[in-house]
Length: 111
View 1 (tube, rainbow, N blue to C red):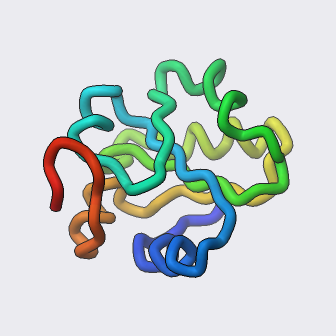
View 2: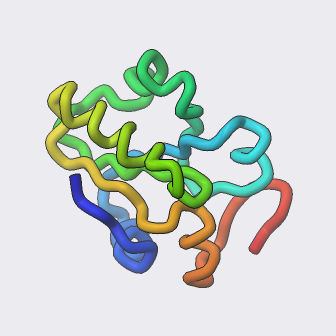
């Protein structure tokens, strides 16, 4: 698993690198604020929910939570790697790190 900085993810998004960004927050927090283009698969539903969005095991996948202080992103990334996904990263600092870097979010409150 690779640790992805907010700056690196933004560069990849700006270059339109094909990837799936997975938000692990609860639905209400996702609705409040998430990275543009991210899909919501709450961590409690992750083991049975990610397959809907991640059809190609060779695609770049970046997972994140609110802060990732509890290691939710790490656990999700490890699950994906164990299932054969080769290009998995965890966003450093979660959505809060993204906001602190000055990047935009979608949802009820823009940053």
